[in-house]
Image (cartoon, rainbow, N blue to C red; front, side, top):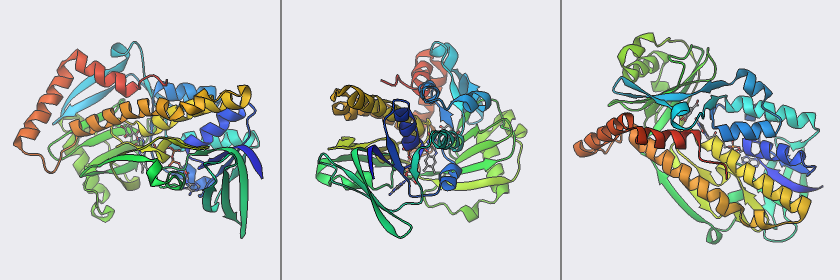
Length: 391
Ligand code: FAD
Ligand code: DHB
């Protein structure tokens, strides 16, 4: 088999890249390790920057997003139960963010790709890339007991943090910068109405909590927990009690409880591998970088990588111009590092660090007080939260 762009991974990055390239008549084949149902069922991100929404519109997959997505003009920060609103519309010249689950984005993208007759190989085994430094890179995989090879002009590594593409670039070719955090998030999905129309990021001496949603009847909740937290220790009653304590104030009394539909522990990590290219292999999304989820940048960064990579590939195949591909990594990394800084800052601002001493705790409170009382500080948060320009 031969294709122009071989794509490893059918997460948001791989599907969106395939969709955008197809609009320009560029052929792709996607090779995915899991089944489509598995990919669509993964409960992950939920908050989209305007740049991501615009890219999904450009890809022709935003109709349902505009019908069902919830548009938010701000967020709230709760400090020991005391709530303060940060107004994005006012502070960033009218910008808003949109709540629409990653599960729904992947469903919309899979549907659009199938309508266009896309080549998607699901449940591929032993996926590997070969000859990435030369002119004829290949993707190999096993399916139905046979080994298959796809000869490509270019390979896009969209296979997430645990994929094989980044690992196929030798360690001497990549610089990795990484930071781990001494806590994780317990993520809960519940069929209960959200406590408030907008997201609440809650700083509390018991630990951080985030109140978000998937719709006006489904809440998504996160609680700071230990990295090795055992889900069995978190029956529904304990979760709601802890959420109430961390939310505090009068809102706690309004919290509607109900059975959890899903519970998981989400690790916290900052990670960047540079450059995001080796030979004819280009990395995009979580394959190249991970942010801690505070600030909701992971999926949005995958989208901004894909925007740059799709434009560079269109320039290459339609016009024979290679500048975009040559500059791809540097152009992505500028935005990636901005988002890394912001995600690290928001994580450090809002969480309770187990090793924090009395000085650290008081300093953290002073920073929170400054944030919610200074228009400049709120503007800096708002500008980064709605997302820096897609470049
Ligand atoms: P992925 O979505 O990881 O997609 C990669 C795809 O490649 C997957 O389908 C995978 O099955 C496939 N794959 C992997 N290995 C292979 C292989 N060897 N061969 C073929 N295919 C392979 N971000 C936020 O902004 N907010 C959040 O609340 C949030 N919560 C998260 C919770 C969890 C548990 C996780 C893991 C991530 C979360 N993120 C969140 C991050 C966000 O979901 C990711 O940034 C986003 O999914 C990145 O998209 P991607 O397409 O780059 O990678
Ligand atoms: C969501 C997750 C986040 O990490 C975040 O900062 C905002 C929203 C969410 O799942 O809705």
